[in-house]
Amino acid sequence: MSANRRALLARVLAQGARIDGEPVDVPGSLFHTLTHRLSRAQVKAGDVVVLSGLQGRELLLANLAAWQMDTVPMVLPSTSADTDAFPNACRITCDLDVTPRREGGDVPVGLDDTAVLHLSSGSTDRPKIARRSAASVILDAEGYRAGLALVPDDRVAVPVPLTHSFGWGVAFAALLSGCDIDPVPLIRAGTVARKADQGAVSVLALTAPLARLLVRTPRQGEAVLRAAMAGAGSVSDELNAAFQTRFGLPLLRGYGCSETGGTLFGESGLGRPVHGVEILSPPPGHQGELVLRLAAPIEGYLGGLGEPVHEWRTGDLVQHNGDGDLQFVERIRGPLRLNGRFIRADIAEQALRSVPGVTDVFLFVLPRSTTPETEDLYAVVEGNAKRDALLAALADHRSQVPSPRLMMVDTLPRTAVGKPDRRAMEAAVQQEASLRAECDALVSHRLVQTLTALGLDAPDPQDFTGDSELRTRDLALFGLSSLDWIALATAIEQEIGAEIPDGTLVTPEQRCVAGWGEAVFAARATAAGPQRP
Image 1 (tube, rainbow, N blue to C red):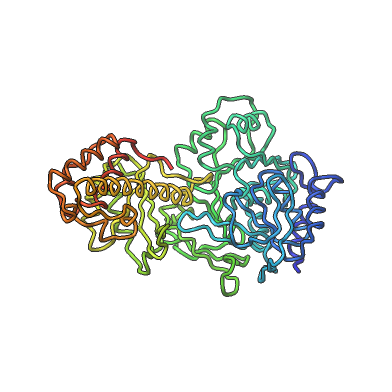
Image 2: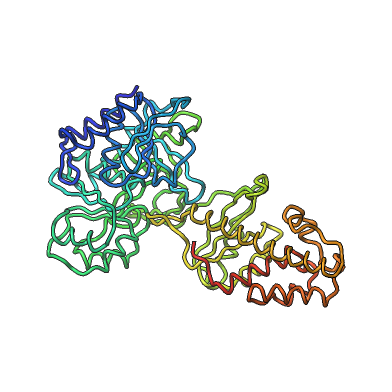
């Protein structure tokens, strides 16, 4: 179906590339074993082969075996990050078993020129499946080859996740340059540092968080790396200076994305365009969204309509300095849609960031688990700000944007390459929603017990779950006197081991199952301290 995938493999084999010192194409190698297993699984040209949870050497060889069979590898970070896009696809699992394509699985269309499928980072939205053409892979590889001055004598260590487009791109740049690649995943920072100090590797590809770990390691030899780079995130001047002090050379910088591969490379900031990449916007001396034109076509996302394009809006706000360097300013968040309407989430984000003690904020929308047709806005807030201060800041803007549900954390969860981990935040929010439901259930159960003991009409406790009128009805309307609801509050406080604020007792809008449930949750959260998703 496509000569391009096999042509990529042919280029790797012709260069004599090695993985952990062993040539790829030797009799009895894992490359041949996986190719044979894919053949026995009866994959066809153009099929998608899911590489599920593979790492390091196994992932690279499985990718090459997929190209040998003219199939399209789809690289997944782990089995838990699987996608429903290809439920019937052939799979190579982490134990190197090959699961044949299930009956009824349709062969995807429109992948004739696609060399690999990657998940986007998902830092601003749910991860999408990005399609990369063979021409894009070659452009990516050429950028890294030129920027790192790769030669066949180099041994390139890539201890970053190869399931991410940055690690994958550097690894295949090394293979297409005929280098020897060390793809062992990071286990201990000291092990990676020792390889550099003892001359076991000449080139090192890192992320900024990994570089931070390496600068703290003791010296274990006198060798000096020929080149080192940090991608998939910004590098501070302080970190660069610390790396140069520890390893004797500065960190080169790289910039790119899952949809395009590496596009910028240099000694500072985000770098400068590699060969085949042109900056369309902003012009030198200005700030704006980074817009690029690439020589290789950008295929976009799986299922996307339209032909491949050559212009790419990165979604990153940058400063284009007069000397040609680009400096990252911030990620441009697109408008959020809540229950069918676009909202000014930026207003809520700015209000939260203005509160002392807030160091980062991430907003997103999630459907409710019990009623998915209804969505809620959430804000994960990093730092040590007071909840009351956050609520007060949001209250000033209620006429402009709905107030988000707050989750306070010590540190915003991030992926292995330093980007906000939306999956982890969604999981934490869903766990919090479950805890909120428990708090509501506790209040409604205690209320029903009290009403029954007083001989008053009592709904079923489960009725409060789906009846918003019941959940927000003033306790006085159930027939309770002030002494009754104070006694009820005391019983709840004794059960949770924390106090319910007095305002919740006397304010009619809060004196209800919903209000008391929120108060119980807040009391428990205060007692437990900030959450750590």
